[in-house]
Length: 234
Image (cartoon, rainbow, N blue to C red; front, top):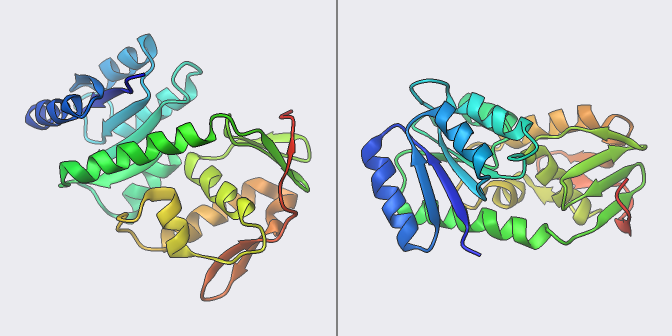
């Protein structure tokens, strides 16, 4: 099935040029320069992936992202944010708004294509995976849901990816660079402070299970909870 991409971008030259490239690469592309129109289009026909500019003329990309992730019909659509703002605060804000990736302008089209394909592959690879049980934790990889002692907790996409990565390699120390490579892609040029920020937020949400994520000083993190066993999702 041809992947559907919704491109929300107010720079019309960029919108047209990248839409043309994506269509030539086999994607079905719908574009709009307005955030509200983008939300409407997404809810009418949920895309596989949304390319989302932050600086839109009506509502900003953060608000578009929050609206899409709050609606059941578009919650599973991947979101790749695009912005000329490359500071850590902007990147963290994007991650907290449930973006799946963040690409700083200007960028080469081949980098964008690589990011899109990586996100789509990640989703396809996890779509049939059952839930796993790690002591106090239950993790449903397909639905991207987490429970702590039977109580569902809400994680951002990035928090979920970090938890799943660490839990899938229980007992193994992962460096911050390795975590970044898995969650964002090998060319994601940001500082490892973003990983620390995300892990801190993840621990707060995991409550009693926070002790499963151990800091290895000067290196990174490791998961010290039990290895996963397959279970039915709650």
